[in-house]
Image (cartoon, rainbow, N blue to C red; front, side, top):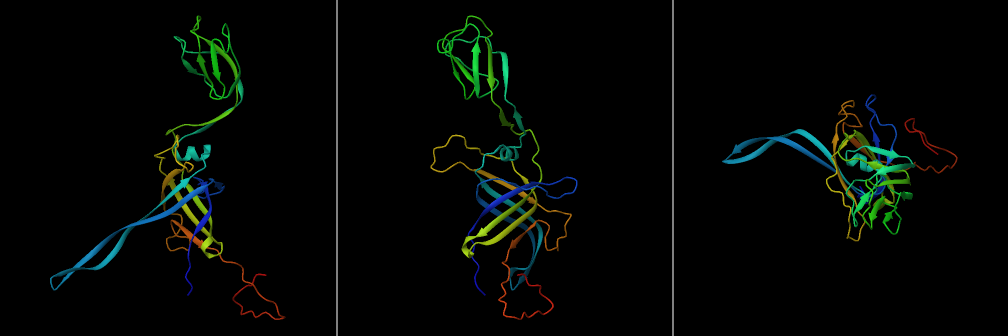
Length: 267
């Protein structure tokens, strides 16, 4: 028997499980994933016996199984962040803001954030840009160079659309995972990992300022749960399965094909 080695690369897809059918329907690619590790654990009970004054384990039984998945994601999309931060995604359409009142008590040197970001056409009655204030158009903030005589200051501006993700105010949904990989150690053979039920832990670290030479990654962890709608002894299993996908068999046609009634050959 030839040894089979493994060096994997591939794509990871997630699908939110339908709570009615308990099935996965639409798969979403989560982007670049640099690490994917399936971890299995178990608990056991042992029976001890003593022979000639020596205690030995004579039997052991597995009493429980558990599985988890660890991965590192590099796609900081709103969909990925909302899943890992237990948040809600919201979108704000491009529009304008008339007479937005700023806090009172503004003095020279203060920086005040507007309600929206990526702004343009900013105007403040009675004040001159460049003399009385400066605008950070990208982040939607105003730095005052002089102390406004009339307060509250009111600002009118246009703003672009945006997408935001809240933190820790939603329940993470149950998902299924599908890893479509290739085994580079075996000539690019295809490998499929399917996990029926998973729940992600909230992200514990989100790096926002970096000084390393590599791009930031989000280290994720999740519990792999059994799908009790399946049978434990089934070929699919309760937790998932790994599929080593084979190539089609190649048949050289020489005028006759031996058929034993068992195999259907593909051409």
